[in-house]
Image 1 (cartoon, one colour):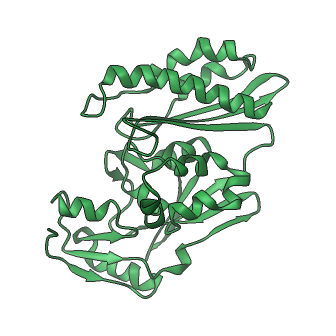
Image 2 (image 1 turned 135 degrees about the vertical axis):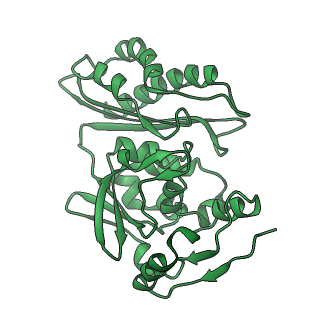
Length: 287
């Protein structure tokens, strides 16, 4: 049973910002509701006000301009999964979304909601981390744009202020020399909550790793970039043998916990296995 609350449904973006200014800490934002409603039913959160953003059509879009893909925060996961712009330019994101939950959830859930829920297991986070996306945050006081690796601060926590909205995700289009991959391990199959997830991006020039990016989910308090491991690859020969030898170091970049889904030790081992497979898959794509 849901706790009592006052339901507010702004008709415009400006009205939504006014409501945030007015109610701030006492309010929760409703996008798709696939996370918020569950938390309210479980008494995890008890907002006095729920602000429904569903009328804000200006936050529902996918566009490509000047070498950047822009996604409105209220764009549904299903729209991202099927978007030709996403699939043709940054398919690692649509690959990740395709493995999320059920089609019913993907039809309702939004990319903004998935990021702002700030679960360490958020499946949109690792691909956006390796793509080095930026997030536009908006309040009545103005706008600011932050790199996604600065957005998450802890489980369920972000840098969003009480009167701010995540309005847009901005993704620079990859180099033609880049390959990407996303892999996920769940308890039964891919569409469950991840035990470990890995996104990779590699750039190869003259048979050498010019750039390697690795991001993981469910292995730390927030989704993380494995920057120590990335540094080991740059400048090395772009071969499967090099990948095999260096992926073991990914355990230095993660700090998993044991929970009902898996032990910390298992997550560390699977971080190595999935990173290796995802890097080889990305390398194969380049070739």
